[in-house]
Image (cartoon, one colour):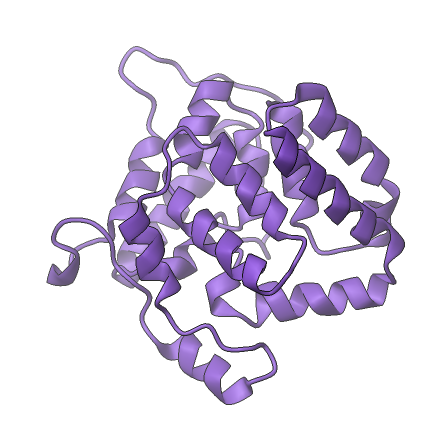
Length: 240
């Protein structure tokens, strides 16, 4: 499913003319592997049509309003979890190290929990391993899909696809907990500031005891290979 994950990564990237020009290749990759349910693939193709035919500046403005201004739609996974900053910092370091073990190198401006980068990494793993790891933040993606549905955004399809591909399915209580967080409109600057200042929700047993967030622990644990299972290595072009 490496092409599918790369296609989904591209769809969540900041819109550019290059992305518009690659729409046919992205569409072909999604259809060739057919790993995503047909109804979700149809929605992905509608998103691709929107990305291809809309004015690039309008696309960029909408992208910023959705993913940069709105915390509940942040493309940085650890923004959606609560935990001590040192724990999340160590999780970032571990994730970056895992990328580098697969010859996937980040630029100085990138953070390892950025969803498009995470999906690029998953594209380098065996299918089952990738789907298992995708299952760890699946409740985040399910909540984001629901928020995007309410906004009538075509990007909903990308997160529906991620939920469909994940080995684990989102738990209703975890998704509901995320959906209870404030979700202001991107033009409500005061509410946006308040949302960014508020603590995100915690999941799992002992969530209120100040311990490391369960998702961070699961992501970190999922990066370590099972005993006697070597990590496959692939060579990719280093990121500039």
